Image 1 (cartoon, rainbow, N blue to C red):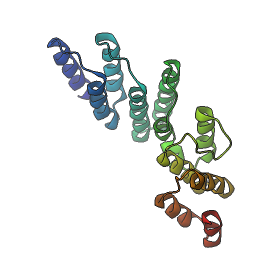
Image 2 (image 1 turned 90 degrees about the vertical axis):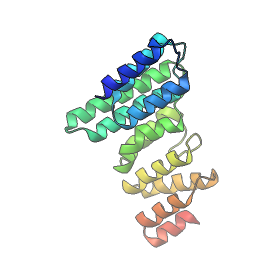
Image 3 (image 1 turned 135 degrees about the horizontal axis):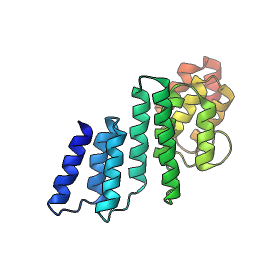
Image 4 (image 1 turned 30 degrees about the vertical axis):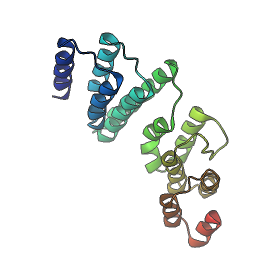
Length: 197
């Protein structure tokens, strides 16, 4: 139903001779990305490239990756989830090939699931591939992305790594109340105090 609705919308807009701008394409794609309908998002992407002068920006690529990330979470089998993540990585490659640098938002989308699972190695490797820097570096991360990195280390039990991330967050003014709560929840009081000093 989602695909049919998207096709109807695109046909109607283009049939009236209207040329949707990038903002309008992004609004429509956001709707379908949140509903975990990447096929619809790909269709909209194709129409954007084919029928208008709008050049997809990093937001559009992020939305495609978001759609596949949500599809992976909703997958019924591991095979389906793995395939959705593979396609998510494919769109990350296309984004870079198109000349866009990954952003903090890109990191948030790609690492949401492994961070919650405490897979700090995967989260750190993704951060290094995207932004470089030493382990625990938060220079190019948003406050939310930094929190996810901290979450991955804490849930995964890598407390020395969590300490490095927390100190870097503090130096970068990103150690917000949520991060402090997370540290206190996962660490014994004395270790939490050491990190928060």
